[in-house]
Length: 138
Image (tube, rainbow, N blue to C red; front, side, top):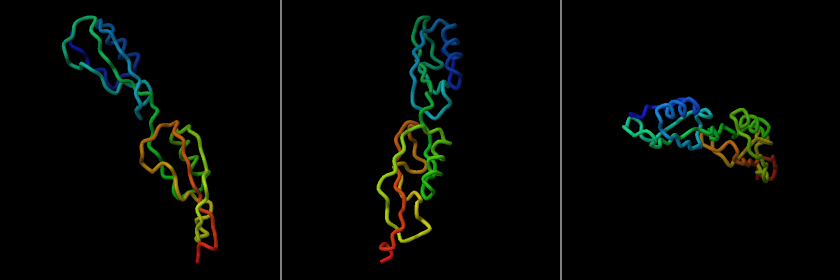
């Protein structure tokens, strides 16, 4: 039998399609930004295999995300931007960063994740907020 291309299919549909052709199916859940349960890659696509041979499909667990812009925004807005992007990790506010710019007071001045970075949705995120300090003007 020729192994059909099941990439892009839902996991259950892909498994059913391959099993109907009498292949054994090995499902590997992999970190991805693709929707959960979508087949993102597979072995033996287009090859001729015997009934009972194993085809492995890689299925998205949808546990990755792209980190949003966090600097400079308020801590609450930064946390909300992460949550809106699907993040569910732990949030830590670290030591403040002194600044002579009053306009930056209580804004995120540093984050442990950079905008555009691929992170796990469960990754911890630490931020450091600017704190106005007149001594920083000197």
